[in-house]
Length: 297
Image (cartoon, rainbow, N blue to C red):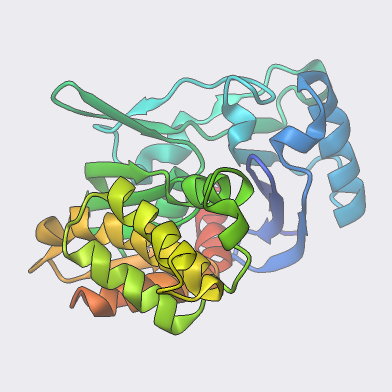
């Protein structure tokens, strides 16, 4: 029987798992909402992984590699960050063995990355595995964008991280939708094309974000703008702020490669077009499966 590996992307809110053979074929796939927060404590991770293996029909001898928040201070076992001087393609040789007695010798956790630029520090945990997959698929150089709760902009040179910037785009959108003076207006379709374009245009002018966000509310209460577009305008402002910050660095560098779900990747592709940046989109499932294959090496 061919060797197999179970690769688990264990995030804050969601969990995705892929059973991969040595040729890179996906034998089984599973996705659920049992992320770190839903597990219910460090002592429950072992039970959650055992149930996952049962649901996917994973044999007891199959090794498991986990990435994401499972390796954070609030996860199953905290794993130190790797310094960004370590090339992405060397990740498979830096896996941390899980110390839980029930999984000794079988489970490993992928470390995140820590990046320094002068006094500034940035980190990632989970995205490094997607970077590994992108490199395995031939994307060793250029700007990679990984949108989400905390959107990452990463510059690679032969698989080495040259720049890393994180934007709290998804988290800010969720917070503004859940509470505060804008929340009552955030019930419309965030993908509304006209509203999204308005937000991108305002962001491109480099106006202060806190001011443009307030003006979304002002426009609605003054009846100068439709409430149903507010969510899309806010989305455009937040995503546009990323592009405004990064566009100068990316310009002339071959554009960006986005790794994200279809809906989110489409928004980033639209923003890239607005900022005149070429954009390639990679499927995150394909990228993660490509990364999983590297853990056989």
